[in-house]
Image 1 (cartoon, rainbow, N blue to C red):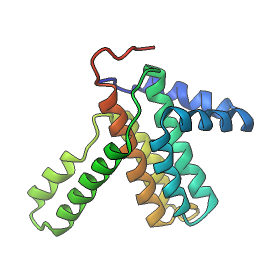
Image 2: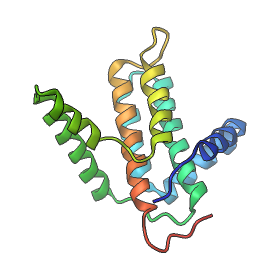
Image 3: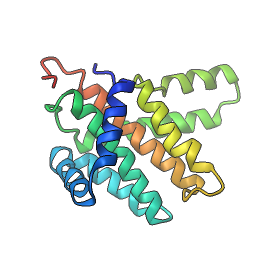
Length: 171
């Protein structure tokens, strides 16, 4: 499995931040071709965001995650609609199970099973959507923050699995 490091994330963030609006739009469009179901999944959630800034931040988070993995390998197989649905259903089941539990040990086991092997990306996503997402001056509602975090984490986890494929060509 390819692990996203601090160095990769920093490089991707610097590259994205340096793009003019037209180049940024072209980059986003390129992912509609490379990962159409991922981008469709992101766009579904942007429609439910409470405002345009929150929707844009969700797209930004997804773009950073995609760029991190594609900087490791540009030959990542497409994530299918079925893979997204399956991962989302599993995530929902675990959250529902977690909410019903009262034993802290069992809750910790569920929480640990939901952790990502991509700790650098998990920290980035948490800072972007959770830490920044609940500040008083944030454009995120609590629901926006949770939806954005869950959406981008799911994408990161699926891409992480895809980079675990034998014979994947690294950049």
